[in-house]
Image (cartoon, helix red, strand yellow):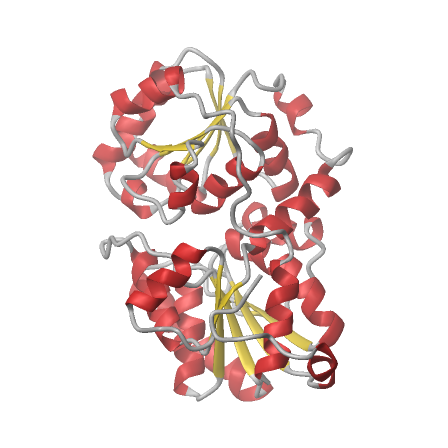
Length: 370
């Protein structure tokens, strides 16, 4: 992959420069993204891993460190859930203590969560250089908390690692061109590792009594769907209207809302606790179709050649829609049901989001930047 700001440099020079990086993670998708980067980063540099505790359920975090071969965090800040303001404020205070103690050359943040924003803001206040993986993504919907987080992180960052040319172009429109690198998507690196590692280890289909390509897989977690009861009811009603098995690993926040609404799902909708990443990859790979509001799962569906129905009104991963493998339906019940019954992707399946070497490109950029 190329760089938006020039050649990464002579590799012999890169190897001589050893940097210290504090990586901030806190939510399930960030563990997945951090895993392949950490494996490469630690071969050449020093990494300190700080887990904010944004996801504190064992099925949402701890299991990932084992499955994805991530070292145990050096710091577990134990922030937990809360309102956006309270959670982000607590993270700022806790991350500041880590950075003051460790004095890193770089702070590395991932994606678009409150942990991302808190890590970037704290580093900026302490005049520590910031690197952002998954830079340049835009939904152009400022009502999404994730959109605010990613925009702020990008404008604070010194190195911006983009998964696509669209992301590079988005940054250019906002006047950001320095330190921008088109590296591909680290989740492609992570998925390749997980698919290989899950062979023989995941028994999720047997445990749930599922046959390959004979069920739908559903995930719902974004605030735009869980905080809006009308949208969530429409999605759940669509699931009830379907005539095939639906596997629904339920995010803790989503489960609380469903219980609060006292909504009953039909027997063909199999609710479960969140599953580990290796099990999730097997569920995705073997599904007939995936329905989701997760950006990461939209990409994984594409890489695994599984049709995807996205339960949002927009997506940051436009290329999957343009390629014909992803369709946006929002929270419209009839649109969801119609898509499940009739959506078929084209035979063509082009390569998207890099060559699976994003982690290597990122680590090279650290050494070149110093």
